[in-house]
Structure formats: structure tokens, C-alpha cells
Length: 86
Image (cartoon, rainbow, N blue to C red):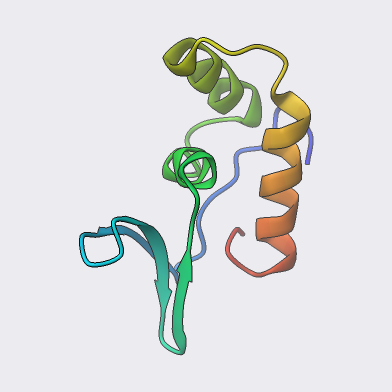
């Protein structure tokens, strides 16, 4: 996925915080995927409006990190393979 792509969470999944799990999860009819904090922060921004470059920029600013493009692209690509992202 290139940096100009606008990833969007699949309609089959719902991203929400689960207090019982104390973490963000992706819910779908057959179950649930527990997410680590960085995956959740990326997926929160996969709304079809943000480009990959914008997602990277927001995360780098919010968490005072740099050079995370490859990691963000890898998670989005994996989400695409798993059907989380359209």
C-alpha cells in the first residue's frame, strides 16, 4: 500500500475499546481480534479519509516518533490480507 492510499476498515469489522479486555478489539460476526496499542492507533485512522502519509504524520506527531512509515504500511497490508481493511 503506497503512502497516497486511503485505507478503510472493512464494514464487516467494528473497532471498539473493550473494558473487560482493557484493550481495543476488532469485532466481527465470528469473533474478536485483540489489538495492541499501536495497531489500534493505526486502525482508528483507517477511515477512508486519511491517506497512509497522513496516518504516519499524525502518529509521528502524537507519539513523538519518526520513521514509522514501513511499520504502518506493514500493518495496513496485513490488515488487507486478513480482510480487516478494504
